[in-house]
Figure: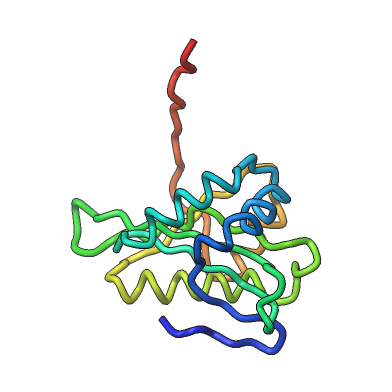
Length: 154
């Protein structure tokens, strides 16, 4: 995918060098993701045909404005893939300026080009603004998701 230039920001595939800034961006939403874990994931995703991470930066690429990650899951019951947005974080100063929408569009285009038949995203019940954002981007509430967490190791 080619870079998408917007008036005040640019969307491109993330690089391991972006790990520290991505970790800061994720922490703004309450994720305790370390820069080392981000770097590890970016390195492994670089060779994965099923994963992509895009970042938004200022047009001169001096500041990271947001990040989005996507994973493709093969559908068992039908041809193609399910594209799942696994994280989306936009810096406080960039919110409401089209950065999130541009990031979501980038992962959707990537997923559609890989054979995704549908996209999904999970958003915590405590994030009504995120729910409104996803609905404005064309996502609708569909089905229920049940989760069981692994027992903590002692």
